[in-house]
Amino acid sequence: MAKPRRNVQFQHRSPNGHDGRRPSVSEISEGASEPGSPTRANGKDKSNHEKPPQSPAPSEFEKKKQTFITRTIWTFIMIAFFFTAMFSGHIYVIGIVTAIQIVSFKEVIAIANVPSRAKNLRFTRALNWYFLGTTMYFLYGESVIYYFKHIVLVDKVLLPFATHHRFISFMLYVIGFVFFVGSLQKGHYRFQFTQFAWTHMALYLIVVQAHFIMNNIFEGMIWFFLPASLVITNDIFAYVCGITFGRTQLIKLSPKKTVEGFVGAWILTIIFGFGMTNVLMRNSYFICPVNDLGANILTGLSCTPNPVFLPQPYHLPLWTHAPLRTFHIAPMQFHILVFATFASLIAPFGGFFASGLKRTFKVKDFGESIPGHGGITDRMDCQFIMGFFAYMYYHSFIAVYKASVGSVIETAIQGLSGEEQVEVVKGLAKHLVNQGVVQEAVLGCLSELGMRRR
Image 1 (tube, one colour):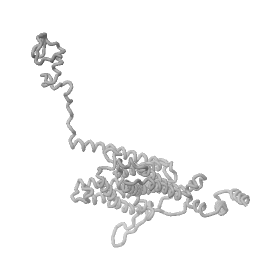
Image 2: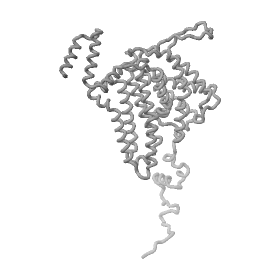
Image 3: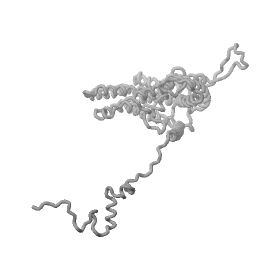
Image 4: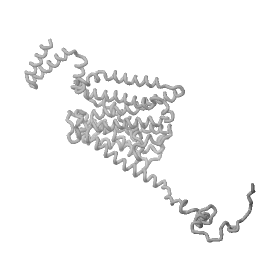
């Protein structure tokens, strides 16, 4: 077998690798594309590897400017949407409160959830939503039964649900509790019980307090709008006063809050509340309890105004030496001082609580539901406790308790037998005949009905 010869040059090739002929254009282009060729070495294959020029990164000022613009636009969108819903009717505001409940619950649950663990455990997320649905069923049912007894208790289908509402709600909760215990897995006990406790805390701090806000709507739009507006304006006044003459830090959880802004906002919120109350209590749509869910700002509502909205005479003591010792003012103007003080001095601590919660889990915002603002919870952290306070204060010092059609029907249905209920109806009919409200033929029909039953 012949061995290959080394270092042998053929006569028809030159030492540089070319034969005697001139290289073609294709050979030149191929040679230019080879590594080490002059074209590649100098140009770095500009046609394929040259990167397009990149725009410079936006400065910190540009980022803040864009955030401010986005925040401002969405602020006006939310204001327009809120006032449109409020003037359209109570049912639309109730829908907004319900949506806020659900989204806020989702945001608070999400910051404590560990997706890598939750996805491997049965019923983790499903149970969170189940307990939310059970709680809302109980709370909404309580409100509907309380405010619409005259409708629910006379309906053949709704009556069993109304009379056994609390037992049904309890059994629904027990089913969720049993499923939770049955889903416990070894090695995940701490995580699962933490989620269980966190879910119940979110239900209390968000869903339960939002339920009282919804009850405020049923009592009259003023008890919903006035506390909410006080919190919003107090936040604005605190910001303006803080950047104007704020010097002393108020609390470490919110480094930008100042004592001067805190006190200045308190004074300005009282002035705003006094003026806003004077405007709202002139309109029956705001001061009347809900008796028609189809009412709006144009149709209005009719009712006997609560005495708190009617001007009363007040007399100054002699030692004041005032030229005008007697003046007339509605008691609501005194109550608004308490509302404004709570909105200024206590409600902000709901925001401080939320700030501490976010620092615990090392998150900036609860979510990204509102561009430029963060999550719904970031905007509602003070509103929940303010609405809860408004409900408690109203029912303790302002509400007028008297017999209603719904309460009388409830007492008759739950406390009297069928024969006793007929006797009540006959007695009322006789009274109405004597007063000339109904004709005497109605009493005759009821007497005939009683004879048939016997």
